[in-house]
Length: 438
Image (tube, rainbow, N blue to C red; front, top):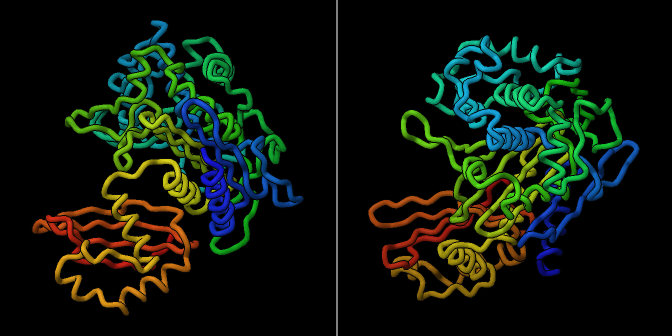
């Protein structure tokens, strides 16, 4: 990574820390098998103020599910269980247990509902609970769909999966992760949320906001509630060590490594959005594995682009808004090579800012309308914003041969929408730029 790119990332993340009104953001980036960026911004604790550093830990929340899936896959590789085993082998009283396989659990396709609302405040989460009590209380509800038919994101799936890891391995769940998942990947800073007291100084304070009020420390979550669904606490720089291991093929044997990142096929023949512990899709032409997390006062994002040998982690000590998405957009602008259409759109936006749009790119009707005054308006209103810091494809559609291409842009802290209407011959029939909300 060049120093120019590093400075651009620092500048934009600092801006977003303020603009998104979050206490702290920690970012770590991996390129070509090594960490090229690991910095934190803002305050890990607001009162008394403690500066966030790369050593600051955050709750990973649902990113923790990736490790539970890896543990199950490791046990499969050892012949101690099969992904085709049903939940009834360990929890026969769970609704549909005879038909819900481990593969379905790990891909959220078994039909089980969530065991607790995903929104807060904590309510009874402030007191400890045994994972088996969660499974007994919520595992007897009616299924949301027949096993294998639909995708339903469920924390209960991973409470069950983590307990199965304990039953099969004979080890406490986090001890298993530490020995078989974290240590081989080079992760040395991970802690178990269930062992940390309220207001522990071993991790950042998570904050929440009521309406437009000030940030307040999130309520304490008692042991057991997150468990296999979200209890891992660590730093951004530690989590990318696992990303490096994944990119280098060191996480699992070949067969299980393939299972981990292959989207599950539903009974209808459609693909689920998940593989096993990871979401899998294409991001503007780049293959992507990822998981997000939201805990009490925390947001987390782990993004992996295997074909680009790129990965990054964004951790935030507030569960408000979309700061992880905003940081990801800024990182992608710097780190990912744009495709041909986006490259063209970027060049058009830059030309609008500089007042140097090439008229040969315009269709005859637009060329007539593209007066010096119109060009000057784009130049004088967009130019002062400076270079874009995010450029995200929003929507593409084709009607009567004309292709509509929309892009969400951030420049000078302003959120904009660039609209291009492209004729079949590649000429531009329309260009607009409008302010939007970020």
